Image: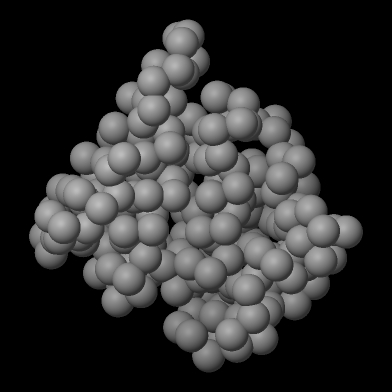
Length: 187
């Protein structure tokens, strides 16, 4: 089932790779991973809508490193063009933010940080105008909480992955954040 969903979504021009007017199908695919049936209306918070659909709890709050929904979300984020994922930041960011909460299992956070790093290194993702607007929040909400020291080998690997995300955020041109934004994000 995962191969069929992943292959159909990634290989189809109108599912994920389409520009904004036809990009609704890509939004629907990612929203369906969390159990929401349609794309959010303009100005509607997709995380709040998804939480309402699941009785007040975001659908990805119960995901684990072995859940099929997380595997499908990883495949979509890894194989879709960066600009397509950047166009869907209102869908992808809340999912990553929920998964990267320090209370979740380290293996889940490690895989989510790997997905985030891949996105940050993608030239198409970095070039999208919306990404620059989200960069400071990306740093403060996703990366910095995972840089905090915790005991254990798994926590060490999560810190290392978060440091690699920080490096990906700072690498390349154009700069995604100003020095003032970096300073504001650090505790």
